[in-house]
Length: 67
Image 1 (cartoon, rainbow, N blue to C red):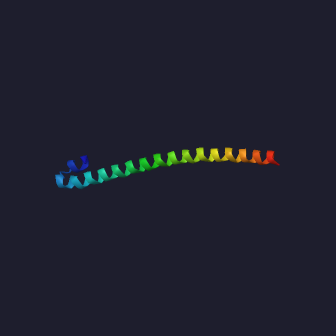
Image 2: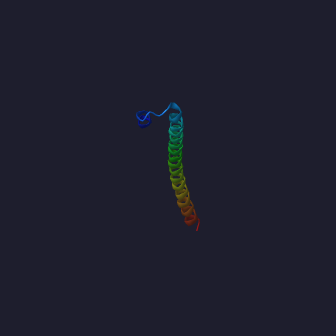
Image 3: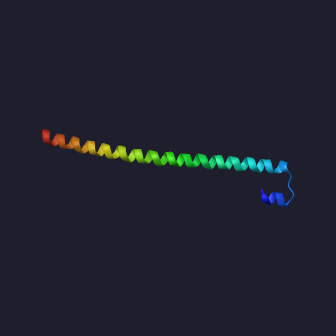
Protein backbone atom coordinates (compact mmCIF):
# COMPACT_ATOMS: atom_id res chain seq x y z
CA UNK A 1 0.00 0.00 0.00
CA UNK A 2 2.80 2.39 0.90
CA UNK A 3 4.53 1.64 -2.38
CA UNK A 4 1.36 2.46 -4.34
CA UNK A 5 0.90 5.70 -2.41
CA UNK A 6 4.52 6.72 -3.12
CA UNK A 7 3.92 6.35 -6.83
CA UNK A 8 0.73 8.41 -6.73
CA UNK A 9 -1.73 5.53 -7.14
CA UNK A 10 -5.38 6.48 -6.92
CA UNK A 11 -7.76 5.10 -4.28
CA UNK A 12 -9.39 2.87 -6.89
CA UNK A 13 -6.10 1.01 -7.23
CA UNK A 14 -5.84 0.49 -3.48
CA UNK A 15 -9.20 -1.22 -3.12
CA UNK A 16 -8.23 -4.41 -5.03
CA UNK A 17 -5.05 -4.56 -2.95
CA UNK A 18 -7.10 -4.28 0.24
CA UNK A 19 -9.42 -6.99 -1.04
CA UNK A 20 -6.47 -9.31 -1.72
CA UNK A 21 -5.08 -8.57 1.75
CA UNK A 22 -8.43 -9.41 3.37
CA UNK A 23 -8.74 -12.58 1.30
CA UNK A 24 -5.21 -13.61 2.28
CA UNK A 25 -6.06 -12.93 5.92
CA UNK A 26 -9.18 -15.10 5.66
CA UNK A 27 -7.20 -17.90 4.03
CA UNK A 28 -4.55 -17.75 6.77
CA UNK A 29 -7.26 -17.78 9.41
CA UNK A 30 -8.86 -20.85 7.81
CA UNK A 31 -5.49 -22.60 7.59
CA UNK A 32 -4.85 -21.92 11.29
CA UNK A 33 -8.29 -23.25 12.18
CA UNK A 34 -7.71 -26.39 10.11
CA UNK A 35 -4.30 -26.96 11.70
CA UNK A 36 -5.79 -26.60 15.19
CA UNK A 37 -8.61 -29.01 14.32
CA UNK A 38 -6.06 -31.44 12.90
CA UNK A 39 -4.03 -31.31 16.12
CA UNK A 40 -7.17 -31.90 18.18
CA UNK A 41 -8.13 -34.88 16.03
CA UNK A 42 -4.62 -36.32 16.28
CA UNK A 43 -4.81 -36.07 20.07
CA UNK A 44 -8.22 -37.76 20.08
CA UNK A 45 -6.85 -40.53 17.88
CA UNK A 46 -3.92 -41.12 20.23
CA UNK A 47 -6.24 -41.29 23.24
CA UNK A 48 -8.61 -43.70 21.50
CA UNK A 49 -5.74 -45.86 20.30
CA UNK A 50 -4.43 -46.04 23.84
CA UNK A 51 -7.85 -47.08 25.15
CA UNK A 52 -8.16 -49.74 22.45
CA UNK A 53 -4.74 -51.09 23.36
CA UNK A 54 -5.75 -51.28 27.03
CA UNK A 55 -8.96 -53.09 26.11
CA UNK A 56 -7.04 -55.54 23.94
CA UNK A 57 -4.68 -56.26 26.82
CA UNK A 58 -7.64 -56.91 29.14
CA UNK A 59 -9.27 -59.20 26.57
CA UNK A 60 -6.02 -61.13 26.15
CA UNK A 61 -5.71 -61.49 29.92
CA UNK A 62 -9.31 -62.74 30.21
CA UNK A 63 -8.83 -65.24 27.38
CA UNK A 64 -5.68 -66.58 29.05
CA UNK A 65 -7.47 -66.87 32.38
CA UNK A 66 -10.38 -68.63 30.77
CA UNK A 67 -8.16 -71.26 29.23
